[in-house]
Length: 262
Length: 229
Image 1 (cartoon, each protein chain N blue to C red):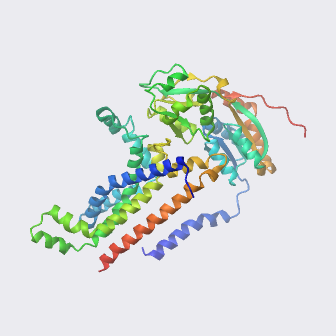
Image 2 (spheres, rainbow over the protein chains, first blue to last red):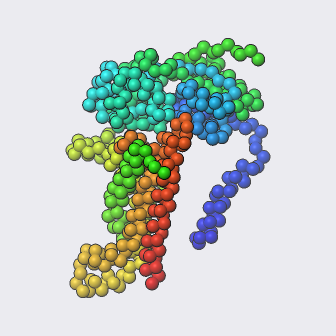
Image 3 (cartoon, rainbow over the protein chains, first blue to last red):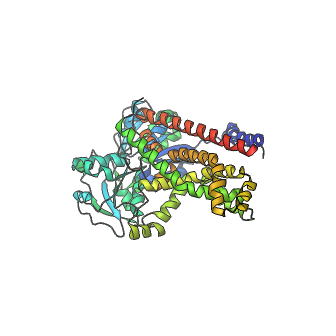
């Protein structure tokens, strides 16, 4: 193949999908639900339930809430955003990107160790033991689970000494995977993550008072406000049906706020 | 543009990782480049494919395979740990290894082109003058292909500096240990003020990539000129 043929092929592969996208879109544009990595199982189940009930298609984008918030901020098409903390919803709200919001779920922070051959940890101070060479957290500067974990360790006076051992995972599930695979001696994740991880064991739970309240927030994105199905999805995530799924997976479901006067 | 101490740490670490990666991969890249330039066999396409695999394999897959093999519970990783106390996953040495694997095909490509440009008659001449195959290689073939090897090394260095996918899976993101340029930028991009705090690292990455490509192009041009001559 000569250079020109390669170029033509390249051009084709770049533009062909775009041309395809110009065709008349199918009438039912799918909804885009952006959700925190730690809520994967719950959100997948709820989205499938919602699809069955409403007939609308839901596309999931699952990653660290920080990553999702940055994507939404830079114009990604999102209709509903489930963030693992409220701060990222606040950030989007500051940019005028949030139409409605509520506090949806509560969670707890736990320390986990690999199931096999683990160091015995009974209390937070044990994390400072020399056997704990590496501690996996979600990125403590941006990812909610990591931000909470850093707050807890700071409140305990452990942060500065543990900091050099911290592996900053891209999201809470990567931190969990490092623990399950035995790559790190310990990690800090949500209790809901630990519950679904066969290769990890909960060593202890952190006192709730060590961090700001752990709250997963739900936001309806400004541009989705004009789409009735998007509002339906937003409402569905706060419905009793969704609540039972969240509860089954260990989340604390917060009471719905009273409807604001219209 | 002045860098903060944290940024300097990131830059120094990245350079060290990329240099070690090149040093690690270079001998193998030279051997493979020479083999691909000289070896005539029906197995050559297979060998060629294997050598180039890391170039097209998603780096995340490369990292995952490294983790499976060399992780602390992997078949090789657990032996390294128990026999020598050596750990590669989640260490800067691991980051260098990941970068070496991913840069390897690029280095092979450049050295192969250079070896193809070495006239086999010069090698035969050396042999008739009594030089053994090793002596012929080190005193005739390799010096004549040095431009290509350097071009490959520079390209491998640049690719190693940019390595993200395999590195984050195998070596993670540990401040001062495996937080290299791309990983730091990835981390920074997720903070509330976004890349505002990391634009210097972005600029630096572009400058380094540009210079490395330019240098390797210059060296490759020389080695190609030799091929034409």
